[in-house]
Length: 136
Image 1 (spheres, rainbow, N blue to C red):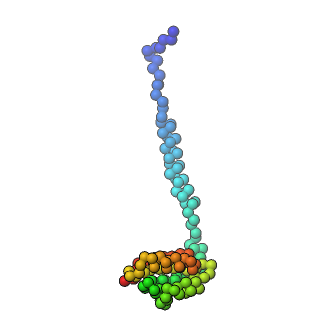
Image 2 (cartoon, helix red, strand yellow):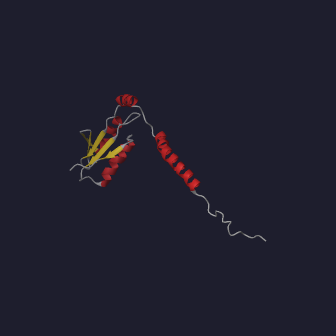
């Protein structure tokens, strides 16, 4: 039989201090490395190179369409009948990188006419269409 001595009282708890120390060291290492991981994903350009590219970039002009009423559309300050809108837009939107089209509409114009002008601009080659607040 095994008899336990009354004076033999060993340590029966696990020492967690080394585990906590290692965990804290790992947390500190991860806190230091996390910003470096995010910075490597962000493309940062030198200011000299960025300023040279900005000087070379040409901003395309935009084509402004204002739907005046059911039958007339103003294209870059020129009043054009709706029937001649496609013939007017095609040369303005020709090319590899057509300019953005900005469309505004008066309150008197119906929703169907507005959508029809948007569709016609898209068919004529508009890739980017912006809608602004209508004229009064």
